Image 1: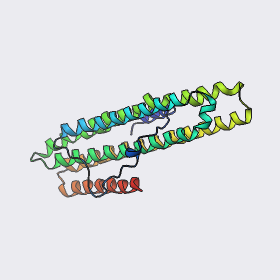
Image 2 (image 1 turned 90 degrees about the horizontal axis):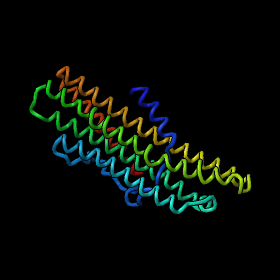
Image 3 (image 1 turned 45 degrees about the vertical axis):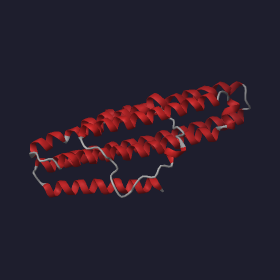
Image 4 (image 1 turned 90 degrees about the vertical axis):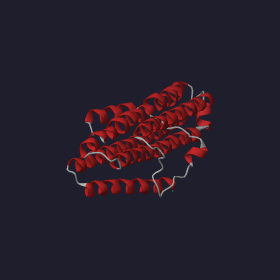
Length: 242
């Protein structure tokens, strides 16, 4: 993984906050026995991956806005801090679900190509689309979510409402609220970054390893790479359902 990309993500996520997602989506149960992608072409997979990211972004934006309308001053913040924490938990959950979905798209993308009646040369070339459309386009769009949605909450709460209350509130109360708010935000930033980074690393390694086997015309090893990646996805789906 490119160091500059990781560094830039760290800087972006220094403005990250999580969002409470709709309950039905947060508690969504994934089918742990199959790869849940119904696409029949790689073009369809590319579109579906970006749409999933965009849908997540819209959801986080909507819930961020609703929360910021409800919490407008220090008093309302302290009374609703559990809702802010739920927002963090929800955003992390949505990140975990989305990271699994993008892995599934990468797997299905590869499966469609490997099942085509084409030459190794064509398959090798077509598999590069996993990097271009899933790793880069969808992955970077996922990373942008937390710059364009969650970053705002850092400014609204920790660096906004709480900071502004320094001169008007009891210091001990203010200090505890400020410290807790930063810790909650920081934990969210770290957790979301880890989820995103692990996803990107997995997808990159999968497409790179698979292309190497195709380049060597080694069908057995290519299938082993496919099976290994699929098993890892199914294990993640089990974990996220717990």
